[in-house]
Length: 269
Image 1 (cartoon, one colour):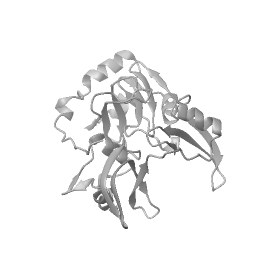
Image 2 (tube, one colour):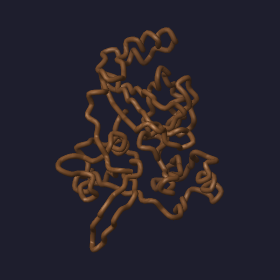
Image 3 (cartoon, one colour):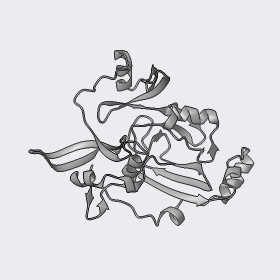
Image 4 (cartoon, one colour):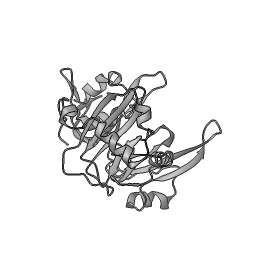
């Protein structure tokens, strides 16, 4: 999948102050790193012995995200756990309650922006931090393929807007509040994205279920980029026979390509 940030842009000083960068190493697991660089939030991370301006915090659970400032620099944002969810200006009391209760997974809201143009946001509720999350569906990069299923333009638009997709590989839904960006009733998925000159494969394990529960296996994100001169032609294939033939030609997303990647270890959750 395409990333919103480069690893070289990470605010290492801020991460060091939080105890997440030490001796030249990032103390974040692969899933949280993927979430940060993709422009989403990490899972809850326990920070310990925080010092600042005469304040000492023994421990605190928070999520982290990256923010690009107007001058192009990147800063770190913290998302602690709220006692009571702050109200969202675009939502009614009923809508906020429906999101909190899980009756709705998200709500799309249109509004007039500062420039007078009509805009739309998709709003979710993060049950872990008790906070509403808004995102612009237009900046979400939908996968070109999930498993062997080649997404249509309509399915990509639904994915961007957080609508539920029912595929042969299972039910999937984009979630801005999850570091992997997706919930599914499948325990693991392979997403494929067509890039200039090749295909990027992303293996996701330990996905949350559509009910928001964690899979018991450890969360894992692995990415492999495969240069393919005929990548664009490959993604134009539609028939089952052609897809089966293409699948046989694709590299196995297994230890041959993924097992040699060094895993990052993170702090206790």
